[in-house]
Amino acid sequence: MHVNTFVKNKHMQNSRLYNSLLRFDSYFFNFLRISIFIVMAWIGGLKAFQYEADGIVPFVANSPLMSFFYKNAGNKVMNEDQKLVSEYTLYKNPEGKVVKKNIEWHAENRTYTFSYGLGTMIVVIGFLVLSGIWFPKIGAVGGALTFLMSLVTLSFLITTPEVYVPNLGGDYPTPQYGFPYLSGAGRLVLKDIIMMAGGLVLFSDSLKKVITSSGR
Image (spheres, rainbow, N blue to C red):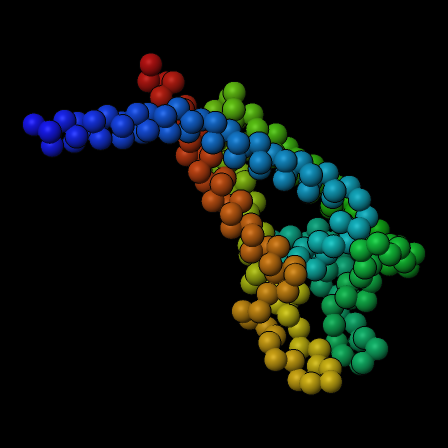
C-alpha cells in the first residue's frame, strides 16, 4: 500500500512537472524567435555599412550561388609575389581602416549594392520569424527561410578558401593549416548550423500551430 502511494505521488509530481514544461514551451519557442530576430536585424542592418560589405566579399566571390552578383568575382591577377590570385584579395579593407582605392574597386564591383540587398533580405526574414509569435503561417515561412539561408551560409565551408587557416609560413613551418583548422571566418560560419537548427524547429512549431488551428 505504501509503495503504491509512493508511486502514485511520484507520478503526480512528474505529471505536474511535465504540464509546467508544456506551459513554458511557448515561451521558450518565442524566446528563440526573438533571439533569431535580434541576430538577423543586427547583422542585416550592418550590411548597410562599408566595413561589413567588404567583409563578406570572399564568401560571395567564391560562391557558385552568389558570385554572379559581383562584377569582378571571377577576375584573376598577379600579386606582389607573382602568384595568380583572385582580384578581390588585393582590395581588402581591414576592419577599422578606410582605403580610397579599395572602396572605389568595391563600388565598381557592386559590393555595396549587393550588400544593401542582402541586408534587407536578412532583416525581412528576421521580421517574418518574429511574426511567428502572433501569425504562425508567416512564422513558418520565416523558419523555412532561416533554414535555407543558413544552408547557403554553411556552403561557404566548401567554397571559401578563407574559412581555413592558410599556410603562410614564418620562422617555423605552419603546423596546422587547411581542413579542418577553421580560421576566424570559418568559426563564425560554422555557428550557423545552430541558426539552421533553430529555423527548422520554428518552422515545425509554426506549422503545428497552423494545422491545430485549421482543425478546430
